[in-house]
Length: 387
Image 1 (tube, rainbow, N blue to C red):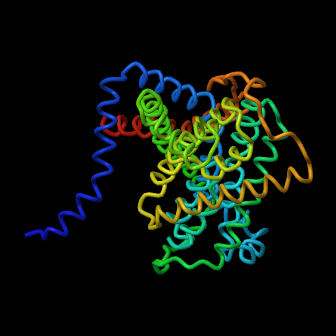
Image 2: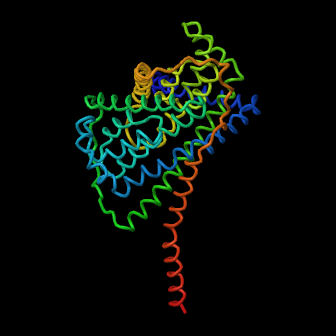
Image 3: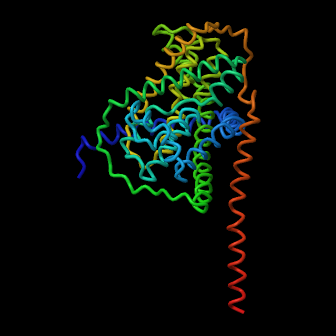
C-alpha cells in the first residue's frame, strides 16, 4: 500500500506534465487555425534551415566515430584535449564537430562515443555541458546574414559561442559528476572498406531518425508558440518581466528566447532589442533544443537540471565575450525596430547546405549498390540450386 507522502510526491512530479497536456489539448481545440499556421512555419524552418544546415554535420559526426576515424583525427590534438578539458584524446574530433556543427551535432557525436565504449557516461555528461552551441550555419548565415542583414555581427556572435564553450570546458575539467564512471566497452578499431561503408549507412540511418525527432519537436514548439500568443500567457509574461524592470520590447522577447531559439532571435530583431540578448539566446539555445538533445542522449546518465544551468552559464558568458569583441571592433548594437522588416522564417535559404545534403544522399545510395548486386546474385544462385 502506497503511503500518502509517496502518492503526493508522484502527483507533484506528474502535475506539470498534466497541465501542459491539458493546455495543448485546449489550445489545439480552440486555436486550431493558429496552431496549424505555427506548424507550417515550423515545417518551413525545418526544410529550409534546420535540415540543410545540421543534417550533414550530424552524419559526419556519427561517421567519424563509427568508422574509427576519430581515433586517428584526434591523435593530433589529443595533448591539447587532455590539458584543456581533461578528456581522452579520442574526444578531440567530436569536440571540434560539436563546436562548429551546431546544436545537435555534438550530442550525436557524444552518443556515438559512448556506444562505441570510448568514453564513460560521466565523461559524456561533461562533454554535453560545454560542446552544445550554435554553429556557423545558424549564427552567421541565419542570424547574421539572414535576420540582421549583417554578416559581421553574426560572425562575432559565433566567435562568442566558441570562446564561451572552450572556457566552460576548461572549468568543467575541475568538475566532478556525482555518479561514478561506468566501465566502457572494448574499443573496435577496424576500419576496412566494408566497415567504412557500413559506418556511412549506419550514420545516415541514425542521423535521419534523429533529424525526424528533432523536426517533430520544432514543429510542436512552433505550433505551441502560436497558441501561447493567442492566450493571456504571453501578455502575463510580458507584464511580469516589465514589472521587474525590463523594457517592454525586451519583455516581449524573453519568453520566445527561453522556449525556441529561432523564434527568440527573430522576435529580438523584430522588437528592436540589443544584440546582447541574441548572444544570450544562442548560448541558452532554448528549451526546444534542450528536448532535442535529451532525445539524442537516451540511455546516458546526466542531470537535465545541471544541463540547463550550464546552458544559462553559456548564455551569460557569450554576452560577456560578445561585449569584449565589440570593445575591440566597435559596431552599433542598438537596433531600431524601424530599421528592420518583420522577418519571416522563410526569408533565407541554404543553397550550400542543400547541396551538401544531396551529395551525402548520393554517397549513401552509392554504398547500397554493391549490396543490391550481391543480393541479386544470391537469389540467382538459389534459383539455380533449386533447379
